[in-house]
Length: 444
Image (cartoon, rainbow, N blue to C red; front, side):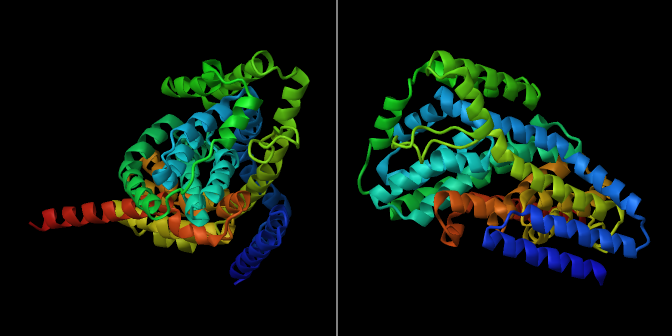
């Protein structure tokens, strides 16, 4: 009963915090106290609970290091002209009658490059919303396409903190995971392309505008050199270089380009990496190309750390054993994935953060994989195909609420998050169909 009360109160506090704009660290701190109280009621000493929380929080440090690198790389890519170049050439490719489709595809590409859904929404998402407003395009459809594309890279980019976190939790190689994610995402991606092509036909762009591109050319020196930081990420990924190394080298390259090509000073570049990039307030691009910074990731890092503490206490006190007992009953690939699918909906709704959803879903289902002799690569792929994406379908989860806030959208964009809900559902149906065929084969 104590566990139900603690979970319910934490859930309510998280929802209220999201809607009130209160920093999520506060309800998570309250959650730590309540789950610690539950552990004490079950006979655990305060010192032991502290150690459990410490071990849980320690697991998040690997991801927090990646967060810090992401915080530094996004603004320095902006200062070097890498991000503006991606926006500039991406916009040049747009066909007005396929505007929504291009919003999705370009967001997919950018998110694959920078590995962050929030960064993608801030970098190209705002630009697409501006163009949609000026071209009379449905804003909800535009926001949905951008957010869906942003989670394409959030799920499978080598620079993604989510992908790094899943790899760490499951003790797998991130590049092996990415290869599996591309395989399992091909059909959902193609279906999404068809969906956004049809939506583009329904909501075409009435007028085209080159205002943003003209301003980019005025503010930045664009040439082939500015693509080097992005090329480094791609090439290092192909050779399976550790993410932290590839990101560090990319940061150094972008720093040099910022100084010698864009004319930025070293002090300004360092300031950008710490506090985020921004142009002069009088610049028309001021509200479009800005953001990032290590400071901006500290709040997210604290949320991840606190959520990890709760997960550590819950795991080591075995509070959720009854749910684990249920998930362990699955004896087929379909049954296991179905349980991961269902539990990820619960954890994403209760946890209000992507990280919390991943940690608890992993905790509740990992023994089922061990029991059925499924390797950790399968577990990693299933977490990426459920918890990572489903969190972005819950209106009060920060995974969706933050992008909607950045884009100035609301829940009307949810029907247009095609890629995000097609991928887990299609994988569920595929495994159900394959499982059914195997049963028929055995019966014959």
